[in-house]
Each structure stands twice: as C-alpha cells, then as structure tokens.
Length: 227
Image (cartoon, rainbow, N blue to C red):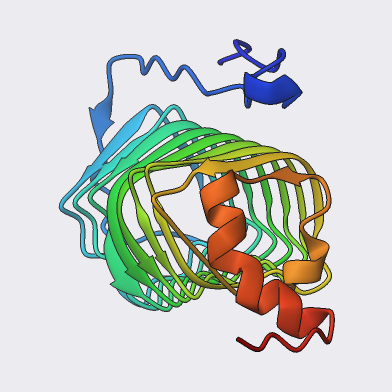
C-alpha cells in the first residue's frame, strides 16, 4: 500500500499520497457470476462480462479486473482494496457507498457510475473517460485524477482532501455544497464548473483558470460586467 506523498506540494498544497499496488500472483476467476457479499482474494477477472450481476457487499482484495463489462452491475457497499482496474467499460455501474482503497483505475470508459456516499482513499484514476460520475456526499482523500476526461461530474456535498487534477479535462462539474481541503486544480487541462464555484475555498487554481472562471464568479457574486 502506498504511503508516499502527503507532504508539502507546490505552493504549500499538501500532495496526495498515491497507491503503490503490488499484486501477488493471481488465479483466474472461474466462478461464472459475482455473488452478493462474495470474497474475492488474489483473482484476475479478464474480459469478464459482469453485466447486470449482483456483487453487493463483496470484497475484492489484491485483484486485477481487466477489460470487464460492468453495465448495470450492482456493487453497492463493495470493498475494493489493493487492486488494479484496467479498461473497464459500462453504463450505470452501482458502486454507491462502496470503499476503494489503494486502487488504480486505468483507461476506463464508464457512464453514469454511482459512487455517491462512497469512500475513496489513495486512488488514482488515470486515462479514459467517465461521463456523469456521481460522487455526491462521497469522501475523497488522497485521490488523483490524471489524464482523464470527466464529463459533468457531480461532487455535490462531497468532501475532498488532498485531491489533485493532473492533465485532465473537467467539464460541467457540480461543486454544490462541496468541502475542499488541499485540492489542487492547477494541473487540469480544462476546468469548467457549472455550479458551486462559490465552494472553491480550500482549492488552488492557476491565474489562467481564474480568468476563465471570472464570468461564472461574477455571476455568482451578482456582479454585472459591461464594456
């Protein structure tokens, strides 16, 4: 598990601690379908079609999920620990109130993922595209979004601590009621905030981003800008 980082970052912002996942030799998953409250330890799920399956409350420890389909897969209250998830695809995956700790999510193609009320700690989301990511009232600590595209992510009421956005595009984000601490947005290649721009206290943005957000900030503050 990764304990690196967490110290002072650029501009005095505490850097996120990244996961350092070292998987043991894995056994192939051969059980056919997920089971509620299942216990999956040291398994490789490769190109599995998990569409519509119910793994609610399941525990995945030291696992690799590669190229799996997760359309409408139910994983509410699941625990994903010390695992690498690569090339996942699907719409409507339900991970509400789940726990992701020491996880790498790489090159995902997901839409409408439900992660509301979830807890993410030492997680890297690298590459890929996630549409309509629901993180309402989630808790993110030591999370890095890197080189990915987030379309209309919903962070409403969430708490973000030591979260970094690196070379990623954030489009139409909802920050309503969010609480931020040591959140570094300066590395975002695109930053578009649809709602909740008044909740940016606790985040660091660049001067260029400030200029881009100026119209939204002015509207939020009731300032009329005329030439």
